Length: 446
Image 1: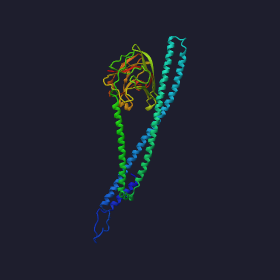
Image 2: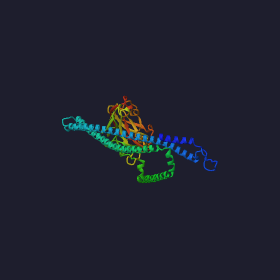
Image 3: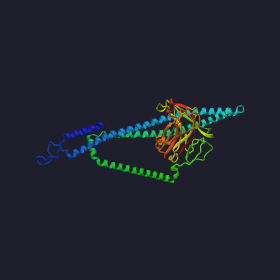
Image 4: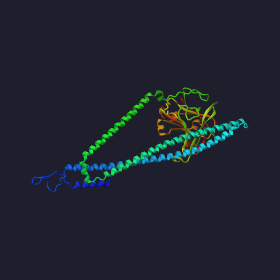
């Protein structure tokens, strides 16, 4: 409440103290009001009291409104600052990826030049040079994919920043207008109380017009919403039921270590060296500086058969980054259809399984699963360390099959969104580590 409002109410209350509470008294000569009495009247008092009380409520409402406006402005300013920070981080990441991409190109060029003339080399040396050329090419492709994804994220974040700045500008203008209006209301004095009381009919007309305008706008909004809902319902009605149920048939069995049956759902067998899993949905690395990850695809003997295998090279730091915990890194594979938004129905499956081995044998990681709830939060429920399910202290360099019960994850398995392999701090004695793991045949088994 402003000082002017307080002063106005104080003067009104002071005048009430000196007023008589009789309506009138007949004089000795039979006419008019007797001298010495205020001709104020009970009606005048009650009307003045009502106006005074209304001013009190106006003052309190003004305080609440200003506080709400300040809070909204602070939230928008915080959003703008956060997005500017994200843009700076993305620019830094792009510069780092460009540098890595240039280095990878040079390595691939060196590997190619070394493998041009293999006539003077033994068979094993020639194979090693060709394998080095293949690894260098895979690294170039992987870094190029990361660079493209990061540049896309930067473009999107710039658009969001522009929207946030426009929103902030509108909010500041609105706040300034409201502050000016509240300041004007605060100047109401005792003289203006009568004017306000006299102009009530005109004010009520204006308020009725404003109310009618609001009602028209609300009706228009409701019509637009109804049209959008009708379109969505029509689109859903045209979609086949199979899409909603997400019933994915098992693929034909290739010549490798696993036999596919109706008891198994293949998430990814890594036969295709692209950024999509066996369900046809996106799969790629996730990382936050200073931690990082790079993926590639190699051929190895798994279970006595030649097989395409995923290789994840990781560098998990234990310092720096968000909250000073060294950032994060890993590999994810989507189970949700990005076009329809339908989640994977995994009811009936009991385990998630995959084959794994380490490069040095000292590597470790966890498996993350996300349902509809965790997908909205941008996170997942993590398993124990992979070595816990193998009953060993170190991963080792030999191929082993990991079987993790789905009951270890408290999730809604009718709406699975993603699976991830994450290199968490608690996987390493020092809180961080680096190395490479090889993974094959990620399945859901009944």
